[in-house]
Amino acid sequence: MIRAALYARVSSEKQAEEGAIGSQVAALRDRATADGCFVDPEDVYLDEGVSGALLIRPALERLRDRAAAGAVDRIYIHSPDRLARKMAYQMLLLEEFGRSGLEVIFLNRPASATPEDELLMQVQGVIVEYERAKILERIRRGKLHRARGGEVSALGGAPYGYRYVRKADGIPARYEIVEGEAAVVQRVFRQYVLDRLTFYEISRRLGRDGIPTRLGHKKWDPGTLSQMVRNPAYMGLAAFGKTSRQRGENPGGSGRRQPSVAKRGKTSCARVAVEKWIRIPVPAIVSEELFESAQEQLRQNQRFADRNSKPGRHLLRGLVVCAECHYSCAARSPWSTKRGGDRRYYYR
Image (cartoon, rainbow, N blue to C red; front, side, top):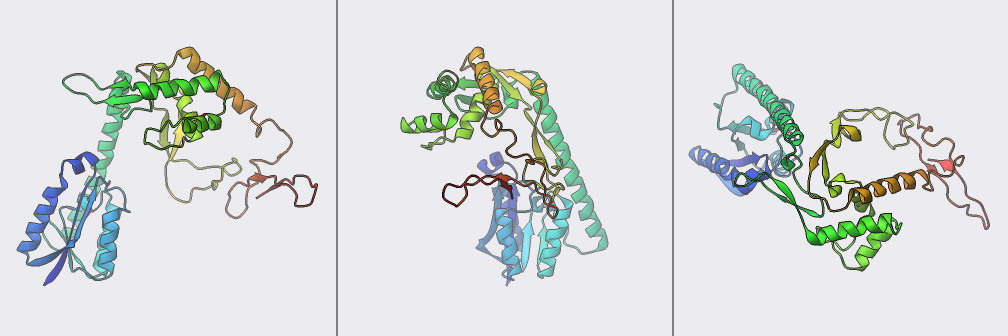
């Protein structure tokens, strides 16, 4: 009896919710049964809502471990793009399965190991990768067009204080104010601007008063509150395009704990200049004057922060770099262990 495993994948969460992966599994099971294979229920591997551009996927990882252990003889997959959306990943996985002695069967292509068939699969992989890039580009251009037209649908989800209402019956998507959350937003702005409280103190008071976060957590993160007072949506102008994905190198001595040369070809998220943001009108929770006062307070706090208001203490901050790994060194100033000792300043 041939032991077979089934692998199926859908990319979006919507497809997973609609049960689109079920049709793949049914077709795979019918083919395995027709070939006289035995499929153990534990050998059905499903990646629901996982992109094929990723190599590390939960179900795929379990299948690879199972294959390496020699627990299955054959793998059924609907098509090569269900296995991976990148040709390099397809080749890597197929070679790995081949070394384990497994036979991989794709339902949409004949089972053959001729050079022509291998070439056809490689060409299909290139086309699939190209189609994925085109789809991403169309999505980006579509969002940009909707944002320039003032459509909230370009933003997707709504920040704390709002509810995102999807487009329905010809009515465009929109933000609706959640009264309870909006009151918390107003409180944060007032305490930060009028009472001059720190984000740490505001978060402590919110927790003390038993006000939960949107996810129901009892403790508020000061960083979350900092991002809240920076969000222009609360004054009625949501911003699209605040960040951009780019491939960049972090220069040595920049003050960040990053190598001067990227170890991997990853992209980074960089903030876009404010004047390039696309503004989309939404219901306002705080006044424009209160919001601008908060921005001025942020600038003043950054200017007079303790770490920035003591020149001469760390003269080489952001300049000392390790010669081996090219990571920037961070300044440290612990107290001396001797009784009555002073602080010692050094770099590590």
